[in-house]
Image 1: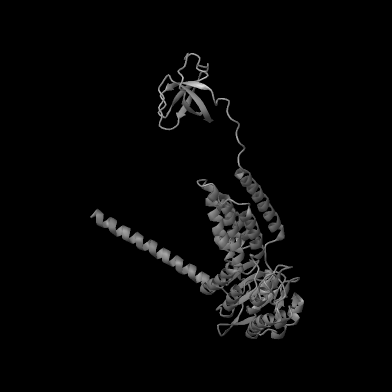
Image 2: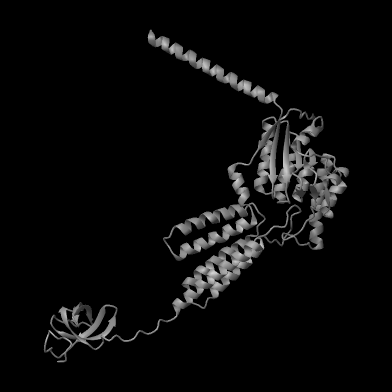
Length: 459
């Protein structure tokens, strides 16, 4: 009877807790649905796969969680065309109103930033910001040949006109950012209908957005941003780390140091630590390079330089392989971010800073020169050692030489070896023919000794 009551009580408690839990979930859901939320994400730096994933995930999160508006705070010099396309495609197909706010003061929306800003439902700039300069250039910032320039420029201009037409912006002026590398200040952009309006800060932006309408998924949406809750979204720790190492200088250092550590491990097997560090750095280098417009021929030359330096240790020569390794390293560093094919209309000029390249290359060359000099010195024939003063002296066999044994010479015991198949018995006298360390090469002395107490005395 008691057991049955306990079972009923336990069931009642379980039902009660389940009901309270479900009511809590329902209440939370209703609260979220009734709450106006603005999702705000900040992007500061080059547009690459990391920042692209962050922006598109923010838009998707806003759609799924019913955000009232998604706001991107943007400051960028440009970025990869592939990443830029994914971002403005996400904006054009978003089911939530999107805003790009070029801020803070002094920020820019250059190259890729122009495309991204123009693709949002609302394009807004802070005072003192700029937008434009989306003309295609080569990977190193150089001008293009006329034919290639026309081809790339026409494609980029077509994209820009399509975006402008979709958002009702000044297509002619936006096209000039591509064809003429034109840039606009915040006020100029507003006057020419390149962007919608100027806002001092985020609070001012939300105030001015209130009551404005936008077409989202084919439907007209009116924004109500009074007393809206601002929810800031940040990159995950992994994304922040990937964004940090997606830098030309950092990727160059990771690749170079990783390759050098592998070289040290190959030349000194068993150290383990250099090999471990080298593998980790090389993996991080490839992750970093995967988020940048890298010339893989340059990366291959840097790694090939390490292989040539290793070969120099094992191949007899006059340092040709080592010199080739240094030349390969420097050329690889210069080519690492150089491109000779079709350029992107959205990428800024990027490359390894000379402030990083020159000191790093100098240190590598100097340390390599010292190593090569050491190798060269080790390959020089050792000077002939002077003939030991023991050669020609006589001693007495203590332990039989068959062919190795022990000899007493000048009161000291030595290891002796007799040549050929000869065996010398204990007590016999021998003559020293050669000395190598503590081993004496001897031969039998045919004349019997006069006295064992004075083995060095003549017979």
